[in-house]
Length: 481
Ligand code: URP
Ligand code: ZN
Ligand code: ZN
Image (cartoon, rainbow, N blue to C red):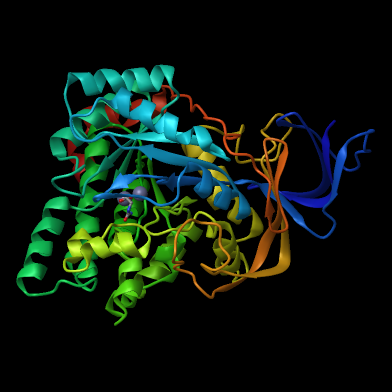
């Protein structure tokens, strides 16, 4: 018994065309102008709709233990919500405590994720350094399909990676054929500015953006990119939020360096006025890092996404309910950092990207799935509608509307940063590895149906990776101009 989707317009990152799609088991097995149903096939008529690859969210934190509490969406509730919003794969983060064995942390996250309803993969954070960390990176990369290692340049006295960790880990990632990823904020500066705010009596959420200005992100972005250049490893900057970081990425890319950037819908659409709202709960609900920026940064982020300087969209989905945010009632530095969005990313990006003319439908696919699949090396298994690919699909009605609200969303959190936003263009059906898991408001995905997705290493021997070091040896002065 197969699943046949008829009469839709198939939209990939490279082209759109009309055709039928036949799925058998977990895969797409045929695409043609007309495919006839066999006995017992399930048939969906997608007349008037688009069919696109299921979304891939490369940045989520389900049930993350963080800042004295645990993120409120777990791997089941969060991935159910993802499916409702058309996202069929997430890449979450294993974040070992400093001194914790990376393999032990990886095992803990695998156990937590057993209940996932979407497919999932893991970046692994490097939060400290010694030979055992280097060895574990090798095991994770070679045996467990981890091809990306994350570095938090912020969160001093917790999970922050200092320059020694960055240099060692970037070098190791390069030798393995993995990619380095960073949360780019200078944690030392954040710490200093937080103390200054508190000394001045600024204890509310308005202190959050004041202690994390764009310069803090710009400095870290430039530093991480330059370390990656010298260590000759590709680098990916998560949640790029400001012009300073975009400029750092653009400069490096123009210089031939392999640098990638991610942006969140929140940073594209919200600004820092939310932190000055007199309602403490409202302001605290927006506390995430990097913070939402003064409005002017938004146009730089949109243009960078349009220009390809930034390639992916993510959510950094990390939910905390009001009672959890209240841990920082008297001190903004203790408000758990994080906001939700895994259910809303596709809708918000379509509405504000495609409906405004900023993105074509094909570019929408590029920035919501295909580019992520390519950068993190799961393409063409994911991120494209092609024979042989996983049958991860959304059927999209570009005329249908949804009003985003905490009253109706499936995310396990009591707030939505896009509350009241009416979006036009939503998925009517979500199909994950051949299973119809969401249909017009009903989520039927079973707990635990999600699969762990291994991501192969990039070739550590490739000429592309060697190019920078060869150039450096030949002409160090040119590299520095
Ligand atoms: O505020 C955020 N972004 N919380 C989650 C952890 C991180 O920095 O990505
Ligand atoms: Zn981060
Ligand atoms: Zn994050």
